[in-house]
Length: 185
Ligand code: ZN
Image 1 (cartoon, rainbow, N blue to C red):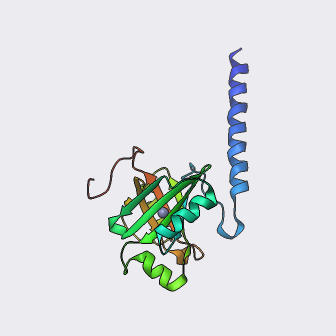
Image 2 (cartoon, rainbow, N blue to C red):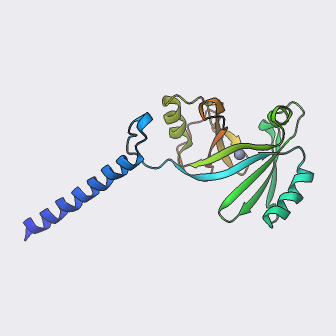
């Protein structure tokens, strides 16, 4: 009786192992080798950031485009940026207007014009993801997580290591992770 039970469990364990192995095989990217099997850290695209000259002009346009009202506007003082958010189905759009002629968004628009500015991924634990990405050779634009819009802790990755795309990591401040930031905020 007990041997049947044990052999069933062994088979189950083997199936789990095979599944993990298959997952690793599927996830393999030949040029970069096989990644370690770890928990999924980037859980989804949290939002797409679009640089605009004027929120006054862009917000009604995006309200028409998405057929939904802007649900929130917020100034992020440390980033010198005014933001406006839209929710469309499961997706979020962040419009970014510079709050300062010398701000990063103003400089971005001067150089490239309005348009796609960044893609933000939601992460389960921003501290461990920053550590992981640093080890993988990505360049973090801020060495510690900083306050972003919409109650998030954020970190940007340099676009030159992401094929020209500015990547933002963001974690909801409501997520319980041991606070390792110096500010203690
Ligand atoms: Zn963003």
